[in-house]
Length: 403
View 1: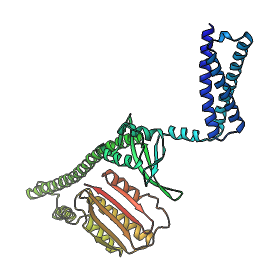
View 2: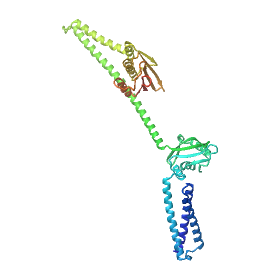
View 3: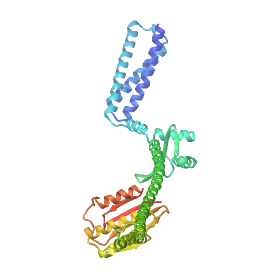
View 4: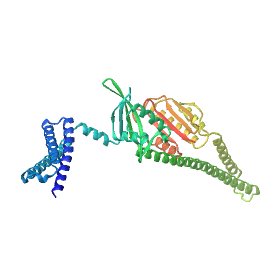
C-alpha cells in the first residue's frame, strides 16, 4: 500500500509540475500579474524538490508518521492551489483577449488563413485549416509561402473549376497583398464555398429547365396566334360564303319570278352590300397594322421614325404595332411631342430588341403602368417576351422578343 502511495505521489508531482510549468509559461506570455508567475514558479520549485526527495529516499516507509503526514498534506494543499489556479486561468481567458485566445480564434475560423512575406516566403500566420491543406496536399506544414503558393496553383489546375475538394469541403483560394511596417506580405484565404456552389449548380439547372419551358411557351403562343389568325380567316370566308349564297339564291328566285315581291332595286342594293364587304376584306388584307398605324400618326401630325426593320411575323408584328400605337398615344397626350423614334435590332441571333422613345417632355417621375401600358405588358409577357420602361432621361420603352 505504501509503495502505491509512493508511486502515486511521484506521479502527482510530475503532473502538477508539468501543469504549473504550462500555466507559468502562459501567465508570463500573457503578461498577467507578477504574483501569479511567482506563485507558479514557487510551486514548481517545491514540486521539483519533493519529487527529488521522494525519489532519493526510495521508500516512503523510512519517513516518520509526522513526515509522511506533512508530505501528504503539502501535496494536497498544492493540488488545491493548482486547481484554483486552473479555474482562475480559465476565468481570466474568458474575460481577456490574449495571444492564445487570438490563436485559438483564428484556428476555429471556417476560413483558412496564411500570411507570408513576399520576399522570402517566411510565414507569419498560418491557421489550422491552411496548415491542414498543406499537410494533405504536400505532406508537410506550410514552411515557405512562396513555394506553397506555386505548388498549390500547379495542383489546382487539374481540379474541376480550379476548386479544392477536401474532406467534404470545397475551398476557393483568394490572394491579397498586405503592407505591414513597410514590408509586403501575401495573404492567402481558403473559403469553403460548398453550400454556395451547390446552390449555384441548382440555380443553373433550374434556369435550364425554365429556358426550355420558355421556349415551349413561346412556340405555344406563336401557335395560338396562328390559330387565331386562321380562325378569323375562316370566319370571314364563312361570312362571304353565306352572304354570296344568300344573294345568289335571291337572284335565282328573282330570275325565275318565283317571288314577284322582290324588285330590282332591292336586289341591286343587296349585291352592292355584298361587294362592298368583299372589297373591305380585300383592302384590309393589303393594308396591314403598320400602314394603319402610319396613317393614323400622319392624321394627328406625328412622324414615326424607324431605325431598323419592323418584324413581319407574328406575334412580334402584333407586339411591335401595339407598342408603337401606345407610345404614339402617350406622346400626343402626355409628352406633347411630334416625333416617335423606333429602333430595332437583333441580339445574339435569337433576341429581337425594340426600343421606342419620343421628342416630347420627359416624365416627371416613375410611370405607373395602367390602361394601355398594362395591357401591352400582359400581351408581351403572354408571348414569352419581356418589357421594360425607363424614365431616367427620357421615356424609353424596351421590348425583348425571343426567337
